[in-house]
Image (cartoon, rainbow, N blue to C red; front, side, top):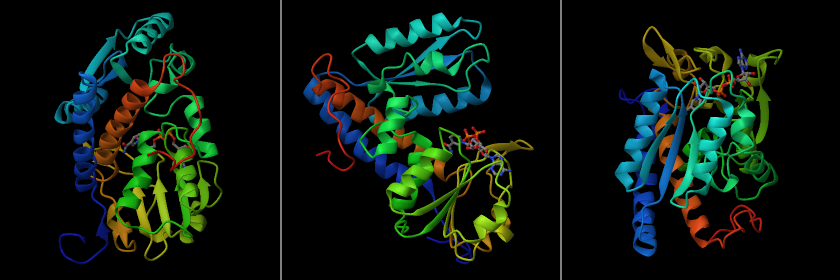
Amino acid sequence: MTSASGKGPRLLLGAPIAAEIRATVEREVSAFRGKRGYAPALAVLIVGRDAPSAVYLNQILKSCAKVGIEGRLVEVPGRASAAAVRAEIERLNADTQVAGIIVQMPLPKRIPLSTVIDTLDPAKDIDGLHPRNAGLMTLGYEGFLPTTAHAAVELLKRSGIQIAGMRAVVVGRSNVVGKPAALLLLRENATVTICHSRTADLARHLKDAEIVIVAAGSPGLVTGRMLRKGAVVVDVGINVVDDRLVGDVDFASASKVASAITPVPGGVGPVTNALLLTHLVRAAQDQAQASPGHRNGALQPVGSRQ
Ligand code: NAD
């Protein structure tokens, strides 16, 4: 697929991929329901409400409803203590119908991230926040992947972009996007460079890259002049500029150079939402199969699942 004019780069659109993923999830949820007699639930914990996260959370809850997953919004007041947040997570950990828990970030400054990480059951950590899941990913075992990073790489794979043997640059090294995206590209046999805010010459690294994933939170950071002709560009950034959503890549100039590029919005975002549902279904299936107390049992290398 190319841009509307027929010229320019191929647009890597998230919606058709998300629809394909959701169709599979819907079938799996229906089979789960038939076998177990209840719909798996996703709990979305939010500590203090703000407008942008409300929009995102509503999208998640709507996506759940569409495929038969029970979406539960669990709200803790913004002024609540860390102990109250911990107690709420413990309650959700113990709820056998809740297969997955996501906690909306950022947390209020008073509440350290460790409150969540130390409490969340890794078997329900479907957004790959827990060090156990991060460790499993790093060592190449099945765990829950950070969903946005998973989406960036899955979008490439499902678009038929060759990753093996390619030189890839990831811009950003956060634990939720950049670092896991780099590890997942490595898993797909790319040769990976990670750039970040202290990288001395970003353009020099980008000039060499056949695949570029940008997750910096800096609007227009990557321009066409920095890119290699024919590069495949995945823009994870979501920034609001003059009331518009824009990515970290300057789309106009990058489109003149790239062979394929994701739009913002409409690229990684929809795939992220759909993949989160696949993580939830997997968590539900694993928990339903596991005998009590053996949730974190035998490690499975990636690709070994039936
Ligand atoms: P973050 O702030 O935690 O990390 C940003 C990273 O970018 C850091 O590692 C930093 O070193 C690097 N960076 C910043 N400025 C840079 C520069 N000038 N040159 C090189 N590297 C630079 O952000 P994050 O949580 O990783 O999110 C990144 C972006 O992705 C944000 O725009 C965020 O809104 C977006 N995001 C999108 C989704 C989605 O579903 N599409 C999900 C989560 C985050």
